[in-house]
Amino acid sequence: MAQWTSAVGATQLARLIASQQPRAAVPGARKPPAYRGLADGIRLLVLEGRVPVAARLPAERELATALSLSRTTVAAAYEALRSEGFLESRRGAGSWTSVPAGNPLPARGLEPLPPEALGSMIDLGCAALPAPEPWLTKAVQGALEELPPYAHTHGDYPAGLPDLRRMLADRYTARGIPTMPEQIMVTTGAMGAIDAICSLFAGRGERIAVESPSYANILQLMRAADVRLVPVAMADGLAGWDLPLWRQVLRDAAPRLAYVVADFHNPTGALATEDQRRAMVEAARSAGTVLVVDETMAELRLQDDLDMPRPVCSFDPAGSSVITVGSASKAFWAGMRIGWVRAAPDVIRSLVAARAYADLGTPVLEQLAVNWLMRTGGWEEAVAVRRTQARENRDALVAAVRRELPDWEFEVPLGGLTLWARAGGLSGSRLAEVGERVGVRVPSGPRFGVDGAFEGYVRLPFTVGGPVAEEAAARLAAAARLVGKGAGGS
Image (tube, rainbow, N blue to C red; front, side):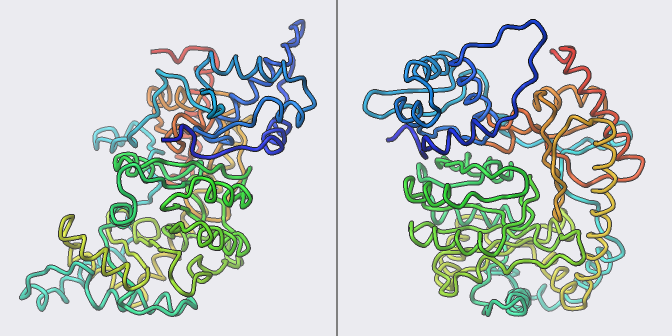
């Protein structure tokens, strides 16, 4: 088995190193040797996820030429990285990035906040808003009225209720992607959909390409399935997807699946352009990779005049390369555990057949509630309120963080529910730990990376607004001061 899963070319690595912001020199301090500066630059790129873990680095001579350095300097930098645990090498196989032993990735997401802590702790751990009312209550009441005919059946619908499958198919068709009910399977949330897809397509040891960073819960689901994650670094800010890098990774690593969030990416908030979507599908088709597209954030545009790109599946008319996943959890409510898969009919048949050995089906009452919402227009009304609430929360949080933490860096996304912030040179893991002590929960960057990347980041969801957002930023600033002073130890 190869030790590396992707490769970084000499020119690309040189460009990444050159893009790093130089650190301010400490008065009176001696300038570090050139090899030390190079080693520190590569280490930071790994920790920030801009160079994936398990990525093969260029040969010493190639990198020396690209950087206009001596080969001796590059060799010394590589040796320093090896001694620190950030590089592994084997004769004949080259050198590839790693993270030091003893620095395990936080494997699980944040545990649910206990009810008794709700009054004292500001919870930024979960990117989900409270239930939209009165639409939730009306949907459940409508579902109860429609339940009696189903109660006289076995209640087992592995593909989903026929009416909801038809409704979802019609909604895709209205978006310009002709879809039949036979192309839809209703699942227990988006997580249930991704789990079913991974089980069907990617057995133990198979490779799955993922954005870096990516959605923490999906990364953990895949780790639990014993697949090999191949991280593909996102471009800076909201630029999103580095298509030359994607083509290279898909070609070299030949992953069975690739998982992407093209619509208001979680956690960065980036929105893929139509050109990026088209190129991603073409790259997947060329590599024989199945592209799994998560659309759970697609309806949460926070700018009314934003022209949304066509769905990724519209660039795969034959349906051979793209599987689309949707959900009610972000656009409506996380407690409404209804998701769906849109794929070619033969894929849907295989997924449905496999449910006999998994969860059998999705709760009928919740399917009826979602169908009621979509049929009556309640869905659009609730989502419109969701957008307004998320936009107001975003603006309040951005203003508060800029005031309290002016050295934190981020770009404001046009949609979704998350802000991805570089934490002013501080450790995201330490901020998360100390934050709980001062009354704010925030997930650290490494939860969204593979093998310890993104240590210098935190994710801030748009789940609080007004005075609560201001207090959350104030508590984060207090945590940052403690971490900066070295007072965040155990």
